[in-house]
Image (tube, rainbow, N blue to C red; front, side, top):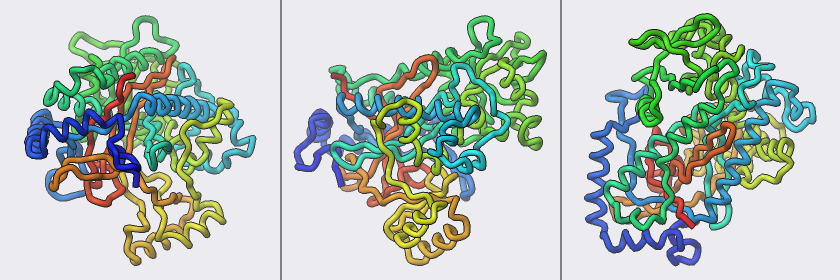
Length: 468
């Protein structure tokens, strides 16, 4: 198990030298006091997330750990190149999927994985989004297993969440420990909202005549990520709207305001595909804007991300991302995948069923840490129950080795302890590809746990990218 602060030889790694000095000189008692103060700030601001299907108050304070996770400048350069490369390839794949399907014709990706995928939208065939960009915010989940190697665990091409925590984590750290940032050794992340707004403006539709009006479309205050919706809209200086605030007239999208209707050009949507437009998809949807999909297809408004973009972040499609990079870009992947077995393939299925106790098995369409089996941590009864599910519908599952994920220091009950972490940067794709120097580090706060999702007991911490 690779310890990111001390490395394999037990000596403090150079990126962590300032953090280690800060921990040592502050002392555990002072750090715990500051941890309590940070949690109070989170609660006062209202940084919560919702967990549905459980009794009691579903609103929870997301656990925040005070000790930052640190990447050196050279590490970030490599990660940045790999993230941008992957984002370009995923968007090229999406354009291909809804046009000629060359990668399927070449026999690289099986057609049934795409055209029978529940995220594939036949209505998008032939649609050309501005700049051929389908996924404008790509969240790439990255893990580390040793001092050299980073691997992509999964892709998020629809509406990757968590960027508000990246920004708020940094704000709280700067407020509580200004001396840590005074030397300017940590790259700033506060430019992200401006970068996001610029990216959205760059993909204005062909019918946009003036400076594009951008809005953020939310399902409403009961949505689990509503805090993030309102937070980002406020930082970008754009309107936060709900579906009833928008209407369609004369082939364009309009927003109701106290000054009368205002034209809307770009919609950063946080509503799932099937709920966008009851006339095009689910007629029972109360969240959508009737007629907006036709306006989108005719170039009257841009939806970010594009409907149907989710076919690129399916866990069965994930297997082929390195092939996409080679096929579309003619490049060698900078960030490799985790070895993955597709249970839809006969030989892969046989291997998975024979080795369930050693593997992590995930549902192809699962998320949030749900619907998965971690073999080494599961009981015999749980393994056999999962075996039956896999046999019943093999195509719904993939499997991966149980990774020895790297650990980063946290402030625990006994002082400084080690916990497993992953990393989600947010890559913005417009006319340019932009990447803020940071991201969301998620941490499995339960000792020995590999599940970092907040809904499964995980927390978050600030991520430092060191300046050259």
